[in-house]
Length: 124
Image (cartoon, rainbow, N blue to C red; front, top):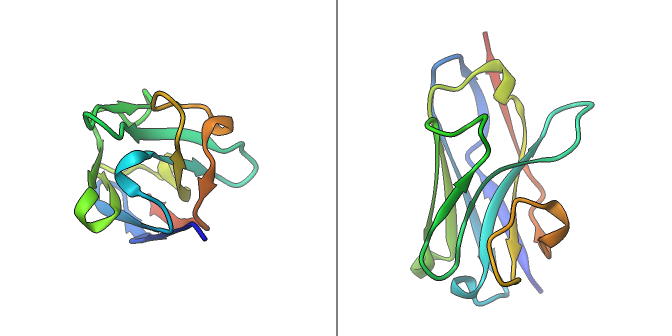
């Protein structure tokens, strides 16, 4: 079965950096668009970043543009989210997701598989 397992979350201070990883199994990783979403307490899950399967084109939410970078290593079945200049507003559970549709989307409904999430807490 398909599994997405995130890691790398933790408690950091404002301005710090973290790198999240998501290892996929049970699918042909290079054939899937991959994305990161996040959900803060009391909020809906929101799009953070996506990376296309074919050309590796990347897409970002405005709130993280210039601070976060998504990348993938198809040989390792892994997608990464490098998060720099973290702010308290970035505090959330971060989820990776896989999408087999024709283009990398920012919409939750397009994604077929989800990980369990990893907590990121940014203190002020």
